[in-house]
Image 1 (tube, rainbow, N blue to C red):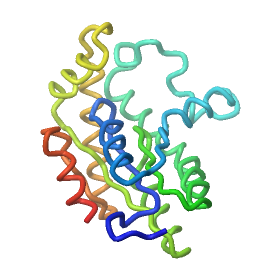
Image 2 (image 1 turned 45 degrees about the vertical axis):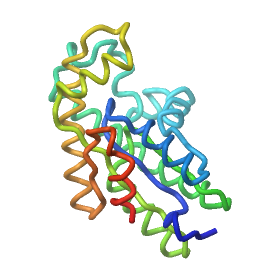
Image 3 (image 1 turned 90 degrees about the vertical axis):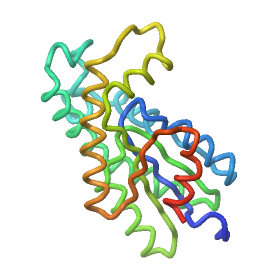
Image 4 (image 1 turned 180 degrees about the vertical axis):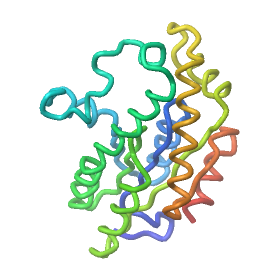
Length: 201
């Protein structure tokens, strides 16, 4: 059902790790009575149901416990982007399924690509439905590392991971702008709800 205050049937929230996507999704879901899908759960299910031999694009990091140290930042970023692209069809499948019911949904995760989000929006528009997408952004590795420290205090400093996340965030933001999708700075968190609303208005 369409409502004046919710101009979407499915909302996609993309962004790199450590930016607060889950927090943003939780806020918007409570505001709009929406169902939330954590795309990371879909990714984990697909990886559990496949192997590197059958679906290599989903298992780039399977053999690496510390990929930043073992592979280097450039290679990790390259493989992260490749994994995201390998999951484009899975995202489209999730969106199609959520559009089959008349309950608003928010899908959030690291591996939502702007390319897949734009395709999902175009597919939905052709059916008279509304899929919107936005991408949270943070290009400062120190800010992301600080968020990791708050979220995962037992893991110790994660500067290398944060540096890759910041570069991946830049890549997602560039792609989002190329597809005319809104990019929202995740900080400051205090004003994020208002800025999300403005981006979706």
